[in-house]
Image (cartoon, rainbow, N blue to C red; front, side, top):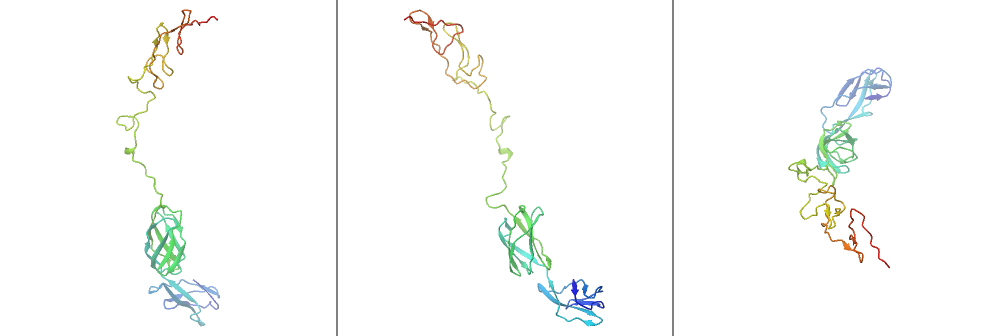
Length: 264
């Protein structure tokens, strides 16, 4: 600490009330710097002590300069002990006089200062700051007396949110392989007795009749399953009057088919 005044060059000591005296060696006539002695017998949160300086010319007046000793604050409880950003919590303890900082430390050791409202020397209300990781962390206070103890506080997820639970691999449907829950996909369905077979059949005139669209010329289908009704052959129609046979509509022969012309 530094005292400012006059005639300090011959000073020998600084007295701090009932706490004790500190030897000094002034280097300027207008100021002197010293380290305040400890006050182990302090009972109250704040102890105010008068400061004097003694020189060859005498001792300064007592009571014109005062120094306050503060006990370090102590946190005894936090209610509730869990919360998310924006929640208000009550911090209880002792030594909450002239609190200047309330600090939250999260599970990742990141810190954030909180907005707070002093209630008394034993209580204050703080708002949980944002930007902190979830999990168990701590809360501390600071006054002129120093830092408080670290009280446990757990940051939680906001209501309606949380970790997305992954489904265990044992419950996921498996594809392919033996014992799988879902059969392997197949581009070709197995033919059944109820389905028509894709094959080339011969008409009554010996001409070849192609299979329905979507079927291979022979063997099982290679594309989509053939779901057509089996082809039913019918005899070629007789052309009127000429004795020429004309294939029914939709059936093509392998060779040229004479076209019937009706005379007018």
